Length: 158
Image (tube, rainbow, N blue to C red):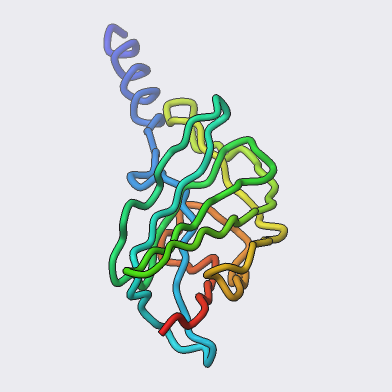
């Protein structure tokens, strides 16, 4: 009879487990392509930044060289993210603005895990100084860091 409380505690403890994902970051993945649809490398220096709600800038990718692919965080609650792509070579600096319209929805793993948000990308718009085009490859953004969400095509500047 005195084993009953210990057995009850053991059963309750054994039934609860924390299944928080180890990689619980949600990023968008960009891969660069040429006009023929072949993966390419941007030889220019690439810096990407955004503006926070308080008006300050936040650098997301700083002076990347020989860029083929990059990952960027995505905002939790904003319906549209605004990114500034600065492409710099020895002669000039060109800046494009990219607008990503998306739906956000909370993702629940467990009360013991940090809150996270998943996203569905609705559309993307951009200016055309250095960027030729951007295509949405996969609309759903979640923990999967191997999926390319965007194919980005830069103009040839040779």
